[in-house]
Length: 345
Image (cartoon, rainbow, N blue to C red; front, side, top):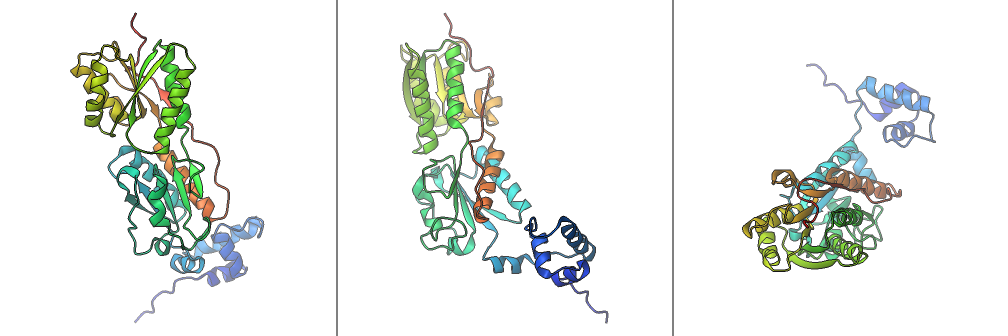
């Protein structure tokens, strides 16, 4: 009976390359720079390729105390934006041999139930998107393994959240600048009577939108700003905004916290006989698929969800390696389409 082939080991690679096993570990683990020469690193990689060597990840993970698993907590699994966040995070994770578990926390508020018997034993870290501060407390725990986070807690990267919040690191889109771009665009078109259709969700990102809009409009004499709150849904927005559009002192522009809210505003406007953009300008934030599915197409702030997820994962990987995450908010851009126009005389 033929003997089964033996899987090559790091010792075999070291022998073939004429180096120590420690050097093989450094090179194949990506930690060789400054510790072995480039020529030695190339010799090790060539030997590994020739032998068909593959590192034993299970043994390596056990040695490092790592599971190579990250939890991504999002408000909803069915939202297009968060699908993009997951795609970007998973792409970066895969390049580094990590897996991503996706977990919803309804509405992004309130404590999230621990999906594992012990998150600290099953995870290397948590990325939490658009969450209230207490929503991840059960997942991090008070006595985890550490691994780069504060104290004994799991490392936590917060997305779209207060930089002074509980995260080990925070990654944000430049939402404040996006709102300023919207305000400048509408003011430039002559609008002075605004309605803010605000998401009825207690979240830092929506607080920023409200604060920035009010601050910018307050700088221009003769402006008026009213606020109506709505759940993030087309139906909810239609019901919430209709009364404001029927009144004698209706706004000339509606600034929506989200593209779904903008779509609901379209429906409400048509029910009360207003034309977009002739009678009413409407803006959104996100640049979801609905933005180009409605007519006229929506002027909105484009948020790069996949880049957002990538940056979040890169930040967590940096924390795990004891490095400083990349700094600076992710730029956003206003996409001007057919839903905004100059105020009619």
